Image (cartoon, rainbow, N blue to C red; front, side):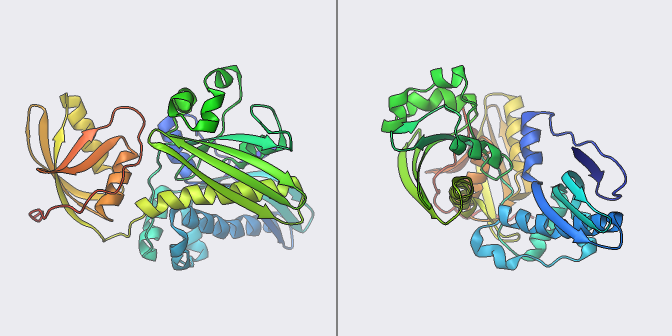
Length: 374
């Protein structure tokens, strides 16, 4: 049974509504820290419960901080007071409760307040990213000695589905493995890396990249071969996890390592320190007034953009100037994740809406100087 509690008063029930629009769901998931184990003892079960849930808030903060920052920034995490931790939590839900007269154990899922998270991140002085990009689709394949197998139910594919990595900066999705999935993939494309052979299943899951993860388990080790397929080419990688645990534990560790690599790459390209950056002016191309308004709104709402102004507009073209945190490369990746292309050409910087799924851009050159915003 799962019980939902309000963060400000543990006895009030709350309803978590994460099933509105897909975009809103993804944004909400970024600030959800799932399944934090808590364990406390006190004079009564009720007191132990409150202590345990309060202690879990510190772990939720640590997980959130590390979710949003590159590993090189982890040492900058703020040590928050109990009051600050309580202010961080918007709501929580409790599952797998066990209690005695003096002890309380459970798994708690904390939903954190985005504005409070951002305020604490800025106070820390760490470079961080709140920019979610398009998902990566991982297709698990298990090779038990007779070659890799796709689509069947096995411990490796189950481990990926149970990992629940939708709330990361780079959401990681796993296909359902239904008839439509099987029909939408050309098997040879998974070996050769032909984007045309996987583009249908990538589109079905809103992904800009397909990763075939083939696990080869042996006694005390799991080797995972990774083939990442994108429209612009194929890359390969390997992960090896060793230990005395059973396959389930080794699979979980391998997935955590693969996810860490995926997230670290994105964070290294988008994480920016508050107050860093500069000013940029760009010409905007658009096909309608609605698109012009949508581009302005998207740019203004980017976590890296501040103090935006409109310098002018004629049919089909407009001009924006804004202050931004981070480098132009980080800004370009941030906007690309929201479907906007920022590029520099001979005449200066340009902005335009992207057709199709957002794919992170390569690093653009440094911008030309612009007049300061008054």
